[in-house]
Length: 129
Length: 129
DNA sequence: CTAATTGCAAATGATTTGCAAAATT
DNA sequence: AATTTTGCAAATCATTTGCAATTAG
Image (cartoon, rainbow over all chains, first blue to last red; front, side, top):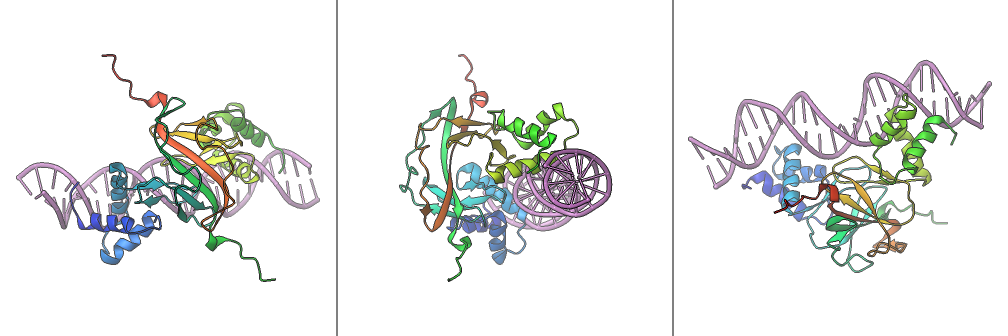
């Protein structure tokens, strides 16, 4: 893998963020510095990073993929309203521990624990009396 | 919700299957009996069933959604090669237990535990010496 | 009779890809 | 100089939607 400005900027936009950005969000951030970078390039590089194991791709129902540069095993809380994803510090529930190597004939590579719910920002604010 | 032939056939195609079919697979099955049913109708009904809680929708990285009529809490093993999804009998790992109601500000609705790996069918068969 | 449901086709939205030009080693 | 990477635009793929016709209650 060669070095390039767009690549470095894309990497920085994922690694520097704790927000699990989407490809479009990453694209926007990269463009602040390098306005000519295309969305296609963002996707190509993210895919590359995922394949080399540098970052992880998170899928959510009915939305864009999000990318996570924190490789430590941890769970996520997905907001079913806005799609936001928050980290759940390991240890809360069964989050920790590495998965078994085999399970029902499958060779297991990784374990994903995802909580679905409503984030604070989307919580229906009860009218004050 | 009214009754209709397409709806009944679509329901039967998900409920009768332990294979976590995709919308396209369900469509194919339904068409064996009712060849005029459109894919749009399949999607509309599946979405309806999901909203009423009759079935559950599973998302996988880079592929179609799959539908699961088994509502008991259980984990899934996703094949990263072919996309197939197998049930993981609860109790194997931390699969069981209902999630906490709140977590990091989120109101938690459900918990998804997904193992990623290679299914038996996709396993690279080691040449017999 | 009235409202829900359908088939069809067109629209959408995210992601991918072909290709010639530009950048990296 | 050889090869990778890019920008752009067009292509794909899954899913959704508008609408007039059909069907259920």
